[in-house]
Image 1 (tube, rainbow, N blue to C red):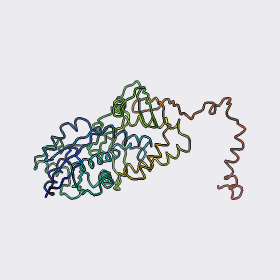
Image 2 (image 1 turned 60 degrees about the horizontal axis):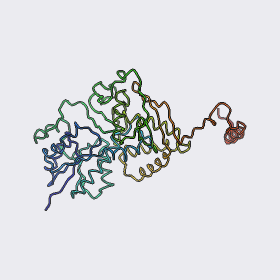
Image 3 (image 1 turned 60 degrees about the vertical axis):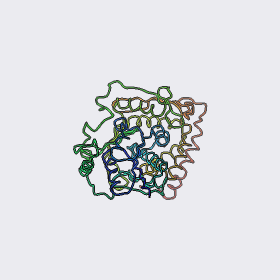
Image 4 (image 1 turned 45 degrees about the horizontal axis):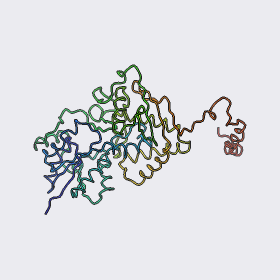
Length: 402
């Protein structure tokens, strides 16, 4: 009888490295690894296939998903101006569905019947991976070692790695847990576990301290087509190159630092520190261009629906019909959000300075305080009277509340 094939979502970190021998100990199986490149960087991806094989994996596929990640996952969130609880730009939340999708596709390609991940029972990522599995491969077996094994701490995991000859770069003195992709890098653990502690200087890895940023501001022009960025200073660039350049510029000027105590899906509050330099610039520009090109009711509807969309993304419901339906609405609403926005970077801030669009709804002739050929002030008399009619009737019949 053929051995069961298991595909593990693999990063090469401590947890996923020790899961490989653990799977062999508890299953009659072959372990295959999958890693999607969404911009983690060469330090994390270099030699990953060989590392997986040394840990016992039969195979390891590393797939370049960077452009797909931006086009199919990040840009939809940009169209919706998606922000979770007013601060978090959802860098990890957007990344998990595409990684799970790639893992499922690899599993189907090699005839695997089981999927495994290294997420703990405390975090959001277990939900994000598993809801994607349910949507894309409900027939496959799920294996989540953190729910069943006896390993309970980082020290236990390191001991297990040593006993099985697994090479890991982690140590008992590692301070922070980090997750990086093209959109952001997140930091958790260490001194950050207490919201009473300010983030130590060694937390930040992308952005300079705004106090040490250049004294001269830098201005750039970001061009949009139907709600998503396509050019930088007039030059058309592939999405991954455009965002990389924005990350570089934003980091130099200390843009994109966020420190938030957020509500996890599982019920607890969690302190996270994020660096999203390019994303902060993109959303500032998109917000400004949207105000110029979207009519009032559609704009306000999008603002009302954004928190619902953000919650769907944060809680792992990327492949849910509701998210797809909302995505269609935001795509339709932003089809005229095309134009250029100039953004100034200075000492940790990204501030839109000007915007222009062929679809601008701003009319200087209507808005001017001077003489206007298109606006008759006399029209306002009847408008104000009718607009206030419900309140006037209520006040006359019921009186004015004290």
